[in-house]
Structure formats: structure tokens, C-alpha cells
Image (tube, rainbow, N blue to C red; front, top):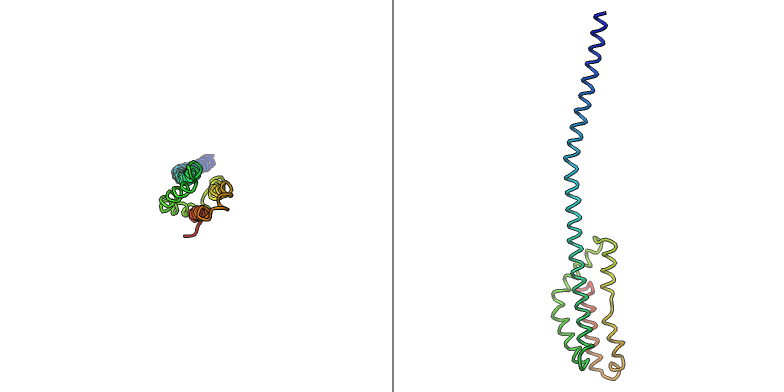
Length: 167
């Protein structure tokens, strides 16, 4: 009987040791997983922060482009003589182009990294041809004044060069 009791006790002790070992292994695995999880979470947060910072930069460039576009239209439309307004608009565009063109080019090159919504905003902004509205607005004057037409074409071409991907 004593021998049977010792075998049973030994089996109980052995299974208790196995249960303890499994429990310790699970605890170590949980600790390791917990230690890794914040690292992954930190990486996710950093990636989201970088994405947000990138989106902020995109929004900033698009806002600058929109301000420039509105300024150009206003310079021509609000001038006493639209020909003088074209000259002022051309000067403004030429002064802003060296600063904006590389930013717009970089924006176009990294479009594939943007969210679908942000990419759509970029495409909409870069395809906004409101400068072309000047051609419609001053169509009669352009037809009768070759110098005015040339100035308008020059402004339009310079603007399109600014927003294009070509150097």
C-alpha cells in the first residue's frame, strides 16, 4: 500500500511540476509578448505621426499653390488694365516658382505614399485649371490685342510649367 501511495504521490508531484513548468512558460511568453507589443504600438504610432506630418506638408503645399493661383487671378482681374495685371501676375509667378516647383515635384513623386483621399486632393489641386479661365474672360481682348494674348499665353505656360513634373 505504501508503495502504491508513493507511486501515486510521485505522479501527482510530477504532474504538478509539469503544470508549474507550463504555467511559468506561459508567463514568460506573456511577458515577452507584452514587452514586444508596446514596441509594435510605438512603431505604429511613429508611422502614423510620420504619415500625419507628411499629410500636413502636402496640405501646406496645396494651400500655397491655391493661394498663388487666387493671387494671380486677382492681380489680373482687379487691375485697371488687365494687361498691367498680367505683368504683375507674371512677376509674382516668377518670384514664387523657384520655391514652389521643387515642393510640387516632390509631392508628385511621393503620391503613391499618400492615402487615397490625400492623393485625390493632390490630383484635384494640380489639375485645377482656373488660370485658363483668364483666356475665356479676356477672349475678345486676346483676339484683338496680340501683345495681350502673348502675355496671357506666357502666364499660362509658366503656371503649367510650375505644376508639371518636368524640370
